[in-house]
Every structure is written in structure tokens, then in C-alpha cells.
Image 1: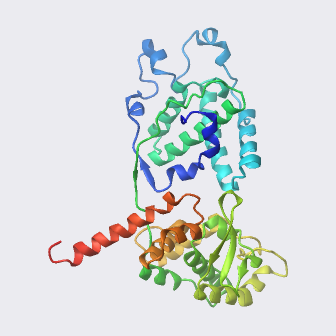
Image 2: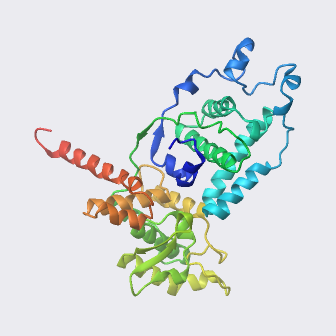
Image 3: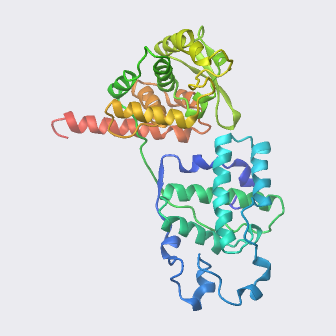
Length: 366
């Protein structure tokens, strides 16, 4: 089945799955596209519209393509995001990514005075070209392209348009990249940074222990509830992407720190209030993703890590260290919550690369 058909939309993965750990190269078509405002006026039709204003007389030539400039959300975009929320059951973070991408695309088309239902292939290429020229890397542009592709497949399925303008646009060629991860020594130094004698420090230490012990995404960590931790069975329950539930084992050290946090720190942070969530902010409410990013960045700097620490680096470290220790790929896939094992296979390349480095460093004839 061709990639442009409506049926393929139902089987397509989420936007982030298309760009995870990949570094696309700029498509040749975008390299050939002139910078906006520099193309010869006589060849404007062939080259497609750019950011420059429409030439005189264009309003009379193409009245159906005009769309009044507006800062309101296009009804088509609202219908699309409603479909993703109700029918596809996407997570809030994925929904936000779709919405932001479509708002930027709709804004670009608004500047060109082109309605979304009247967009042509040339308009989409102009937009992608403008993203590259605006400084975005290939990974980000690939995400925008995937969002627009899904939007117009939805429009075709719903009968809003007859032809998908993105169907014949080639996706950027990609090459695999290795995820960044910490060594075991780096993890030990990181865990030594939070001050366990303070409520905030003990909470931070418990969060880092749980993230490294389970490989949770930062959104999954923030959404954890006290009832999700099963001390007796040594596991926790979390809701991942697409509202999919999974049970992940938790190490003894992590469970011990979490129990200490529940006994000593969390009651003080509640401030005589009530919250079902496991990890709280200083006001007694649910901790946010941005706050977790910031505190990890600070602890990473204190630990002397070579690069800025992010929640996903702990997730990468969890998977890499499991495979280093002999875990099978299928088990790692289940614990990470990957719907496709090809996503998990990137970690096998990490292990292979490390083996090559060890061989070159220690074999006398390497």
C-alpha cells in the first residue's frame, strides 16, 4: 500500500517515533529550492511561493486560494487535534507537539494567504525549506513533515480534500545515531549529589534512583501516584504513551530510598494538604517535567558530567546497562514500553560500539 493512502494513517507511529535517535540529511529537493525572495520573478510559478509578498494581480488570478490573516486556530486543526485525542488516545505531550507544529505551519500559510485546505505540494516544500533556512536541524524538520503528513491524510480520510499534497514529498534520508548515556561511575557520582538530609534532597535522590532503576520517561515519573508503587512485589505501575499501562520492576536500592522519602520527606512537603502523586514540588503539588529537567541539569553539573544531563539520558543509561549485563532485547523493550522492537534495537548498536572500543584499547593487534 502506498504511503499516501488514508489507510496507512491508522498504522502510522507517533511523530516522535519517526525522529527518535535519528539525524536526517536535507532532501535534495530542499537544497535546490532557492532562498525566499531570491528566485527570478518570471519563474515564480515553477519555483513555488516563498515568504515574499504575492505579486500584483495574484488576488485576481487565484481568488479561491486567499485566506484572511488571522491568529485564531484553524477549524481544521481543531478537528484534527480532537480526532487525535478522542480516536487515537495520544498523550498530552504528543498532542501538544502536534498542535504546536500545526500552528506554525498554519501561521506560515496565513502569511502566504493560503487556506489549509488549498495547500499544494509546492507550499509544503516552501515551508520545510523555510524551516531549514531558519536554523532548525534535520530532526526537527522531519517531525514537522510527519505532522503535516498525518494532518492531510486525516483530511483526505474525512473527505475535506481529494488529494494529499504531502504524499509525493520524500522524507529526509536518515542515518542512525547512538543515544547518549552515562557510565556506571557517572551514575554513582550523580546519585551522591542530592542532600538526603533535607526533604527536597531526599525527594530528588528518590526520583533519580527510580528513573535509573526503571527507565521511566519524565512524564511517566511525574504522573506516578503513591498507589502505583508496589513495595511487596518490587514493581511499579505506570501509564505510558497512548495511555498504555505497563508494570516495571524496581531495584531494592530505589525502593529503599522511596520508602525513606515517603516516611520522612513527603509528609513535610504536603503541608497539611493531600495529593495522590508520589513526587511533589515545594508547594505540595505534582512536580512538573520542566522542574525535573532543571534539577537533573544542576545535579549533572555538580557531578562533573561531560555533557548536560537530561531525563532521557537516564533512560538510555538504564537500557544500555541492562544489555551490558546480559538482558535480552525483548525484556528491555517491555520495560521501556516500546511498541516496536526496532526502537529498542538502537541500544544493541551502543553495546556493539562499546565492544569495539574495548577491543581497540586492549588488543595488541587492534
